[in-house]
Length: 283
Length: 210
Image 1 (cartoon, rainbow over the protein chains, first blue to last red):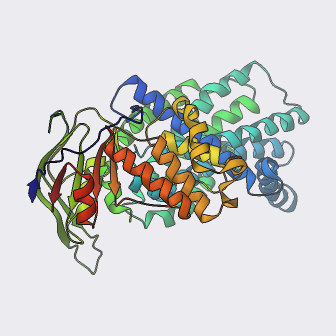
Image 2 (image 1 turned 45 degrees about the vertical axis):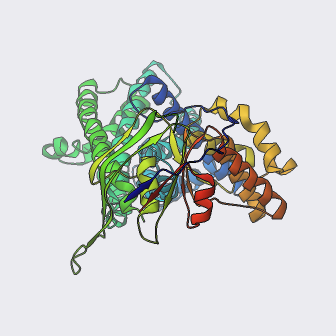
């Protein structure tokens, strides 16, 4: 390499632009505020873009889950005559939170690969991509939860004081979505084969989480193992609140939150380690 | 050089690309950059020349912080630096305004800072009413004009240029070129990669040959 220093006496220097410095995540509060604002703006814009693509716009955010739930109701409630009375609220209180899980993981899993155009152009903390996906799905799923409230009202399960328990349960679910969504998103660029397993994995989780059956249906000795699955634990908590009208099982929820916190730290460490390698593996 | 405040330093930097292997094929590697050391001073225009495959674009990506070196260090003394990324993060379904906001934020500005520049971006890009319409309704030239205007008004402390780009139709091309030259000759710190030795000699304070 050769460095030349040509004399350039005529180089005119006229300041034209005010040079601002924006965010880059470097640990300062300002940079974190900038980062989360970027996530927030992108999630909002994605929802706007998504709605603008079709004629019925935002109505699809309700119609699509409604159709999906009708299919399950038809098969399990009508054709197979499963569950008997009270099966519909039981099914809905499992399916709606599960759908939230499934959609978030699905959308987050491909988010880093889909964001490679940005990764190659600007320096960006890759956690940006799964966070946008999770927030975007969260926005849509809140509408579905409102719909669930209306349904439950018609099934004689109106809101009551125990519903305050939904706040910690939903926060725990958000933490779970972050852990699973972000972990899968950062691993897929390195092991592309994983993307084939995401859909199957979600299906597998659905059948293992008691969406269609209650925990009492499985033998007692399997209960502990059944609840190792965090989704099963969370669905159980939703049903305690919405159907049984009791507070969540705090000890079960506490253990899950602790495990998720540790996992979340591991996921962040994974991003520290693998993040800088992304521009080289995403071609 | 009168101004010798080094804002970015490369110390003995090397980059080696590795192609991913599989069960049947062993991964192979090639060295893109080897033992590069130099300082980038505030306000200067540094040219980078070299044949194809010499690692010019890799060098820009290193300075931008997009990739990390395999050996040596890249020291950034607190400046924002980015490639001139035209249409970075554009979503065709969204309006020009929305795209300008997100693209500007992606380049390191706060939402407020981008919003305060929107009027100038709209004027420079000559999009008129189209600025409020979805980018999918734009012609290729209009998209390029929007991308260029955002990049020009949302410049970082250190601007990295992979060739002096000119975009849009004939009139806009001239305007874009003159704007770019203004920027290069202003107090903006620029690293410019170009195939044209002549162009580099015309605009740069110093030149690196890879």
